[in-house]
Image 1: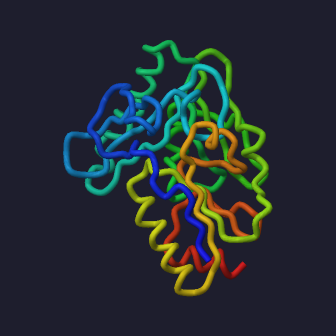
Image 2 (image 1 turned 90 degrees about the horizontal axis):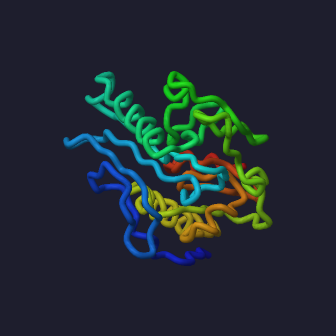
Length: 235
């Protein structure tokens, strides 16, 4: 049996060509920066003030990088460096204390490349017991941290449970794939939309826009293909 509360999500989705803080539509995320190369292709950075970033990370006066992504023929041409430099310069211009992002001991497919971030001076400032890391570049010696609830990594439900928001354009399709797979195989599943800042800050796991639990244990921040879903369900 599928449970799909709050199916309609906030409309703060990636897709607009932006270069400055802008208010999101009503019901969506708070102001954020989305900067994209003026070309057809995946070349962009997205970040927001940490205080209003929909992630269970806390700190004062930081920017949080949701995503830095350069793909396909645009790799190796300096675009990622230019986008990161823009973000860091923007942070300094606005008097921020630093910039932070989610990482992991072992690189996750749907997280920005933390080895690239380290080249700019990002360092691990907090960790979870299952290998996730908070990386930060501090300008003034202060550091952010994971909310204590984010380190819990367990829930009471034994059902496959997906926490998600609607920021990333790949999420609707991934949700539909999981829904169809679970219906076809008689697998109970709960889909819980993170549709407020408070919900995001109080999540029981690390989160960028996606988090999966099975049998009460946190599995991944990665969006799932059919093979990855099957591996989880066999546990």
